[in-house]
Image (cartoon, rainbow, N blue to C red; front, side, top):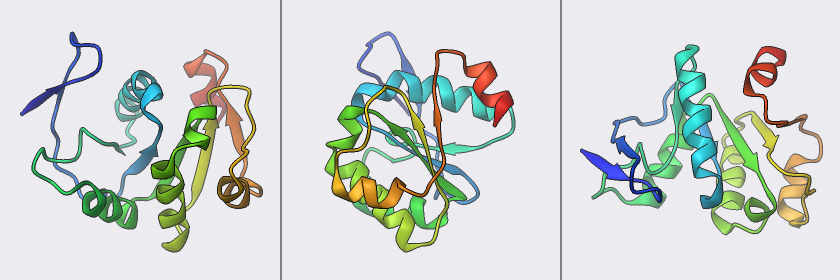
Length: 142
């Protein structure tokens, strides 16, 4: 089963996963192209990822599947942007990861700082990496 991205020329194949042993990627819709690039890079280098909508069947209940994937994942990677800071869904995903004692990492894709009190609380003591347009340097430096 395939679905189309916002860019109608990109098709993504559905891939079943309950999130076990994967990095859960939390993001806001405007970062989806970056999610595709990052996921491809990580998977080519042996790190399995989980992200919606690729890993949610069309008939699947999103809240159930997101919760299951976070509960089973190795860690949550937040792709932080000013828009993500305002997203109720991103905040919920980070809170669920904390509830299950999952490591939370965040990658800043813009220069903004968390304004959401909830994200400030969860991210204050977590190390961040800032993305500077060079994925190779970023991945080799981590």
